[in-house]
Each structure stands twice: as structure tokens, then as C-alpha cells.
Image 1 (cartoon, rainbow, N blue to C red):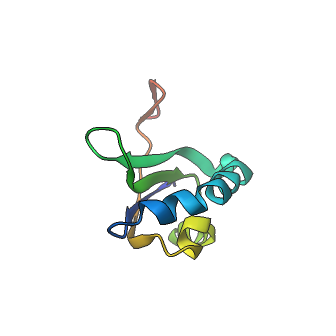
Image 2: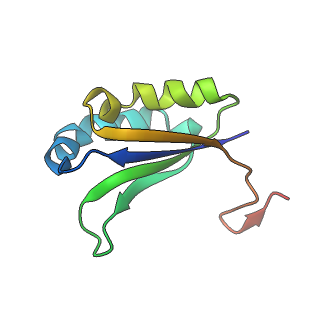
Length: 98
């Protein structure tokens, strides 16, 4: 069953996010088979990142934790906190899975 991972950046960490971004994007590309969806959370005006959301197709919370632990953003110390929640896929890309 998939897991939703929500990350929350430390305050005033935009420069840190930008410095680790390329390595983070390479990590996502390498692990794209696990990603149902992912993306940065933005300010209302569309600027800056404040964290991210990942929906990963893994079987256990431990696998979800391993995924986010391997993200270069984690290694860079970007996140203030991370939340992992089991997720039920009901609709994705307009298709019902119910």
C-alpha cells in the first residue's frame, strides 16, 4: 500500500534547498519507479519551496522511511520534520481504483 511522505523545510533554508536540488532531482529520477507523485510545496505566490510531498509505492513504513532517508535533501539537513502516512489510492490521473 502506498505511503504519503510530507516534508517541512527548516525556516530560511531556500539557499540550502537550491544547493542540494540537482542531486535531489537525480535521486528522484533514479527512483522514479517508486513514485506515484511528488513535488515541492510552494508559497501562495508560487515562490520558494517550503517542503515537499511524495507518494511512494512501497509496502511498508520502513521502506518509506528508507526512501526519504536516502533523499539528498535529508542528507543536506533541509527538513525540520517529516511525516509519513499510509495512503489509499482511490483516484489517480482520473482513474478510479475503488
